[in-house]
Amino acid sequence: MARVIEGNPQWSATIRCAHPVCGGLNRVDGCFALIQIGLSDIKHVTDYEGDTSFWVICPSCGQKLYPEWQIGRGPLNVILSRSQNRKGII
Image 1 (tube, rainbow, N blue to C red):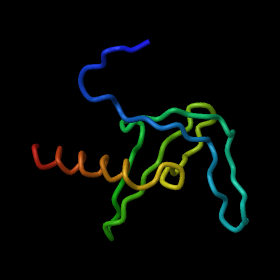
Image 2 (image 1 turned 45 degrees about the vertical axis):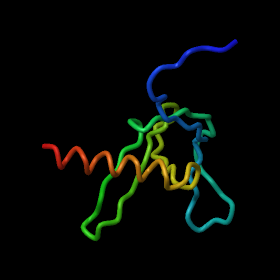
Image 3 (image 1 turned 180 degrees about the horizontal axis):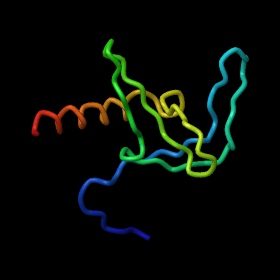
Image 4 (image 1 turned 90 degrees about the vertical axis):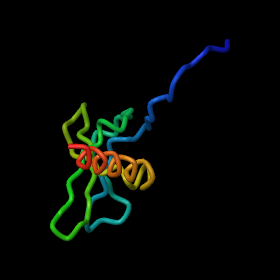
């Protein structure tokens, strides 16, 4: 059945609670739950060198996940540009 949607739909992605483990080939940690995330769920911080890290907290197990390897850099760049636009307004 067709339905009318007005306005821009919110971006979302489904990721798995899985975090690559350093030092192990093809190893991941996490509860492996499927998590639907939106732009507002992704947090970020920029360090003194200008590198930005993005993360999401798994609502099931509380693990910090780095979503870039599951969703790509595009949505993360949108978050960063929105953050910079807000700073320019204030």
